Length: 633
Image (tube, rainbow, N blue to C red; front, side, top):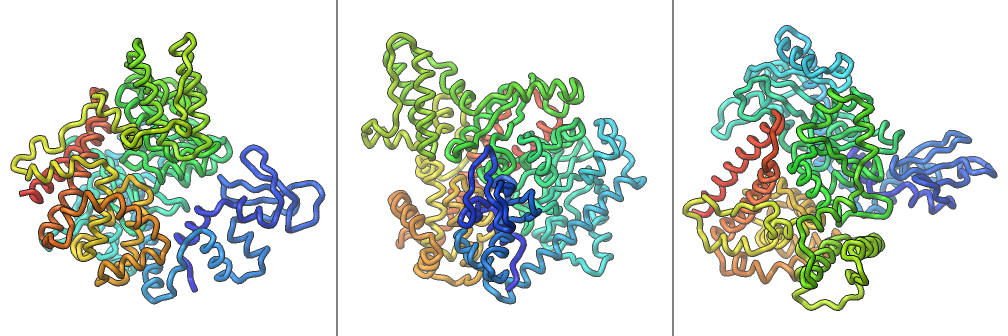
């Protein structure tokens, strides 16, 4: 049986090396590593180390080195397939079927990797050719050296609708279908000829964990371009919410320095690397996701988030705090580095140098302090009622922390801060485990910190139905009364009750960005199951999900979502009504998130990259608004 690299990577990602090695070797934790006596040679003084962040073990005595798969192979006497099967079971992964479909899928992926490498090389040659002169001049004005351009493999896409297409199709191993699947060509809906997605742009290759090119970002050379920055779409190789720009390039430096820098854009990362900070990464044009935070923690226990020092940068930092709170685990958190107003990492290191930037890193602010400052800012606590309100607000926010030990430490720390803030004989009471709560209090605790911020008017939320025109106000009222989690459950629940929706909307369902990690897992499992049998009835789909370990998640979805959904997806509703309401829920959800992202720019003074991103968000907002109107009319 063959195994795809992605499947083996998933095993490595899910199983800490210390867990697997610890079953055979008595390990002692020392800082970020574990040490013990090497199982591969006789020794009396430990020279065997295990590092979970780096994902490998190493013996300084005999040179043994490897990951969880190597260790199990060497110590269990199993064949490679047996080793993978055992570790997959420990990781909670289902073994891939040994089918022609799976083999074909793996072969297609390998061919797409070859295609993306060829495209990267072609873009590089275009940058160095006469046609790339203006792009080279721009890069030189930005202060990038030839070595930096080579290291990050920058390229250029000519302003021609078929230049890349013609060059790739001239090679016998690539087809038009492959170019479309990889996101490099756009196929019009009206059936017209496909054409190059990237035209007249400086090209930034995006690589996966192994350093393979899987996508591109393109910076327009023309000032009249609709979007200054354009990214590849989601493809079989590229999932933007799970990758970080320069992830593979930053890995070694991050391990060596014990730190990771997270900037907002490609040029920030490149400028930092040229200035002597190669441990920089960036999200791919979207807000930081849970998967990206976990990926950061694999490289460093406290990644440093580098944001602009203005209000927009502070709001971006608070969104990351909001996203990170439920994920916090012992030894892992975030720090925040604020640039002076009007500066980003690129402009700062260019203007003030590496030493000044190093000082900013030294002054990085821990997540707990960022959170505390936000909770008490602009708060009046001069009366007993206001103090009680602040305590309740803090308790609600801290309830988002899932790790009980960390939550306890936060309660203790914030209790001391409250005592210092209020002074006198004040005794804070924000212990979430000892305070008896009413049902209303419990419901309030479940509201996210981000919702609380918007309710207080700190960051105004636009009405999702503003300017929509002749929308069905009844449906808007029904959808808007639900929390974000309610809406996500409704989207999943509708598919569970009506799997036929995926016959027409599988791509929409597959690319929808769930905030809930658990619901995202359920969605992925539904896609996997229905891709094999597209005619599943709801009972069979539910049965398959339960067999694959999703029983508890399904039960929670039905228990917490069915009461709000019964009027939308009950047996009495027609297919037309069900489909219309489901699409409406998705579009309204996406519209709401887009408006939050647009509002985040606030009164920020925009540079050209910020302006391009804002324009792209507005265009996407207009498209979502149009879809919402069409569905609701």
